[in-house]
Figure 1 (cartoon, one colour):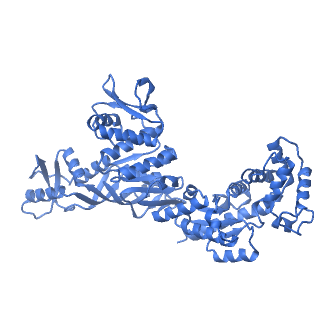
Figure 2 (cartoon, one colour; figure 1 turned 45 degrees about the vertical axis):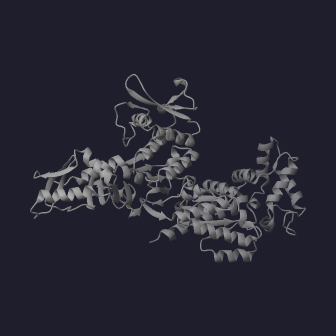
Figure 3 (cartoon, helix red, strand yellow; figure 1 turned 120 degrees about the vertical axis):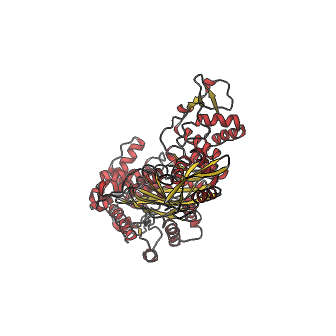
Amino acid sequence: MQIERLKLKSLGSFKDSGWFNLSQGMNFIVGQNNSGKSVLLNSIKDLIDNRYRSSDEHRTERLPQSSQDAFVTFSGDDLMGSFIQRGAYIFWPVQFGQSNTTGTAVYHASQFFSRQNHKFSVSRKPGNVLSINEGWPHPTAGSMTQVVMRDGEWSASDVGGPQADLPELLVRLWGTRVFLFNAQRYNIGNCGIAEPALLFPDARNLPAVLFSLNGDQGDKFLVLKQHMRDIFPTVQNLSVTVGDQQDVEIRVWPTLEQNHRELSVSLNQSGTGISQVLAILTIAMTFERGVIVIDEISSFLHPAASKALVRILESHYPNHQYIVSTHSSEVMSACSPSTVHLIRKGGYTSTISALDPRSVSGLRKITRELGVSLTDVFAADRIIWVEGPTEEASFAYILEQTREQLPKHLATQAPQFTAVVSTGDFSKKRNRAELVFEIYSRLTEAAAPIANSTVFAFDAELLTAQEITDLKKRSANPVEFLPRRLYECFLLSPISIASVLNKQLDTDFNEGDIETALENLAATERYGAKGLWNGSLEDSAWLKAVDAANLLKDLFSQISENKLEYSKRIHSFEITKEALRLDPSRLTDLIDFVHQLTRLSLEETDMQTKP
């Protein structure tokens, strides 16, 4: 089975998702929490009546029922198997006016079931209701004839039925070929030995399946155990044994040796992810062509285990269709996705848009070079790129602490501040202006399909006023520059610095001690503001130009007698927090700057989402 196209209507936050394509291999669904990923994935397995509601209409009786349309392919073997399992008979439609209804029904039914593959357009509704729109003969026939196959021979009788029951076969097949896994705990470590040897959709008979696999296909069971070792270093072996009550139990071993049963652990007592992965691998190894749906793979697997599982599924079992939702770009980096879809939610409504897997790969490459967290990008709708982790942490903290100063429409939802922590090869043979525009251009191009809004905030270091003006003119998205040379230019608050030092060194420096030390260092004019020092730490011209990062570095070394080295990542953030608490007036310009970035990100979102 393979789902080729899908559309959701009146389901959860999806009013009408529109058609989106899925392929064989790895299909990834990405998006923020509560955007609708789980609703989509759960509907592929079991469609429930969860009707779309909005401020326009929320009363159930006035809302259209949830539905799902799909283009789907079933193999001929699977469809024939479903036909035989229900008794090898089917009521087949024959058009009015046919002189030999039984012969016509036998011919069409036998020809139909002999096909290698079957493509259908179907509509699904809650309660396992399925109707076929395209893909079978005479769907609007006026009479039904019972067609039977016995020992390879086809025959028909005049016994008619109220309606064609090919849709029932598709419902049955859909239910046994679509498998859903999520973070819930699966207690599937025990079952009766008489359970079928083909895995149920809920994997409740997994022990019986593995018992049969070990006995009938021992080499395949050995491969399964090796896969488990590759994914979980703590799982070195598996055993499947029959108990006194004719029940089968799966046990997990931390070593290759299996000398004493007491040294193993029941699967039911193992970690949640162990059961899921074991069931997923069993399906991949024992079914020819299934649809394996995994909701939030990182919610029940460590990132390394997620990547290992994805690599194994893609490389060893590419015949299946995998539909996986994730927040983690690292999971996608472990394979070559067939499709990637981004779900966004605005207000009551979710939308789905396809991302070119090549553009995602390009974004991954760029973000790796720049030290950017691609996971943060996937989780964001409004991104503000900043130059480093200090700004990322500090800007977010400032916004949170001053949220009440913002208008309500800005305070409701914060943007995602994301750091560019390394410029790598970007910095070679480029001046500062070229570097800034190179970073801007590449991130803007790569992130465009994912985020509604991208705003950039750079240090003004080594840039002239004219260069800043030119960069803003060249940039399609908003690019803002700190009103001072460096972020640390806002942190020369003696009382705040004293508080941080005293906590770190268990000392009792006061505001005056730090102020005097700063003034003495500033008077040496070694910090890039030559001729601007006038004896005041609050002089705006000096604060705009001074190399405050090196000034703070020297201050920490001097006043601590080289016991404490200034760390931009640690101490800049700590001073920011103390300044907001003890000396907020020092940060007025910085607070205004952060609020301006927030406004710009919302304005960009509004522009992108306007029809």
